[in-house]
Length: 448
Image (cartoon, rainbow, N blue to C red; front, side, top):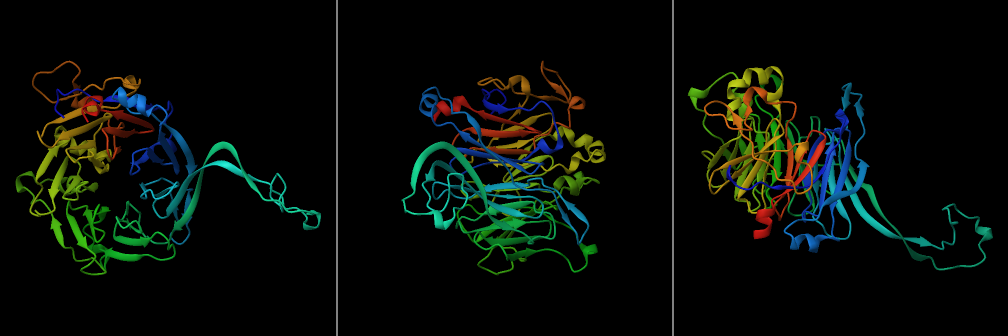
């Protein structure tokens, strides 16, 4: 997408007037079909949105997509306390991952800092009646009063969405969980904390297998931590993890049960001319994603997004500047802790466009074919359905155009950290503090 390309339109938005810490959205994830969208927040809640199917055909004729409406809301995690370490465990949802859809029910994994839970989401539009040993209110009858037997029947009732916990995977991590990733085999998943990566079987909750352990014998020798990890989309034996030193390590579980020795390491040599006090901080990778094809890796550090080819370890094949204008502001960003913000990055459905977040409610898209980027803004004034999103530009010098935002006027409290891209269509979900925006690109939708 170039600066002059037509902007996406808002499909739907979910806005709240008052910001409380518990309402701040901390993760966003589409399921494999894109018909469901789940968000988690700092209050431990999960909200699932469903795409309307009734008007889908009519919307497709207009080049628009059905709206997403609230499908179910449930409390996933509660505050906890680690008595051995005298530490509070927040209820904040760090990640949500959907399992492949195999039957009428849907399954998703959610995690806070310590505990991972598997949830079953199902619909019920019938209820059984005519029990022999229960009355109409569900109370057990006195057996001596039962004089005849009858066959229970199912009768139609109002549609109910039930969300139930199926598994609880606890006690697997000493440090804070930052990633979960479902394997392509549909049976296992990995979870990563600062120093270790574990692999779990979805049916086994009381044990996991430690596949990466970078904890040194003496913690004073610690030089880096794990920041994100993900399984390969097609090969169940491959996974990648990123570190605070800006390196990516590709591991193959066929080589060794403990993958402390990587198969490939991807890192970019540092330019000595740009070396500064902040170099190591801003080079830390906050997110890593395999492309849908499995050929490339997408990473986000503080100032850039990079695309890496699995066949070329010496450096990224593409580098895009997200907000280079902040390089001169690193000192103040360090003082207000913004330099430690962890931005996510995502691919579109055919790996041709990448997206990541920035400050001032801005998010950036880059067209890989042309190398051009566009800055868009998620804000309330454009929250009406089918409103056009304006492209924005940050003014850093030279000729100032109307609508430009000065670099000193940026609001660093309005940050776009979490986002998701529909697996098949040009629909994106953007979390802006406690608001969720869902946009679609009508121009491209009509051409597909």
